[in-house]
Amino acid sequence: MPELYLLLGGNLGDRTSYLADACKSISASVGIITQSSKLYETAAWGKTDQPAFLNQVLEVQTKLSPEEVLQKIHIIEQELGRVRLEHWGARVIDIDILFYDQLVLQSQRLTIPHPQLHLRRFTLMPLAEISPRLVHPVLEKSVEDLLATCPDALEVWKYEEEE
Image (cartoon, rainbow, N blue to C red):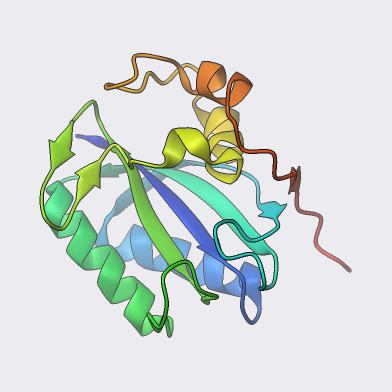
């Protein structure tokens, strides 16, 4: 079964609940979650005048094609209340496909591996936690090597939920 890596993120509302709900929906409609990173918090990337994000990476075994995965994650985002108003804008949930096995795919709707993942510390840190030796099929570098050379200077830290 193909191994799929997804990045979950959000910066509005009860961020931890939205991520947890997304995980439940992914388990129900996309595949079996075999690994999940801890939650990481970071300042907004791209459009910076918004609340901090929580992010998490999941490794999922799926029987779905990449296009079917994309369709399912868009449905999950909609069901959780995602509204697409502006590029890189604030949102309750965002789910991105990072890798689908070692597939390299570029279509009008989907690019795999995710074209920005090597430039984003908030993606690489949780990914390195669960799969540091995973090799990027285009850049031919491991996730831990990509993290070590990542140009992104935004601070990313493990999220500690307030009690």
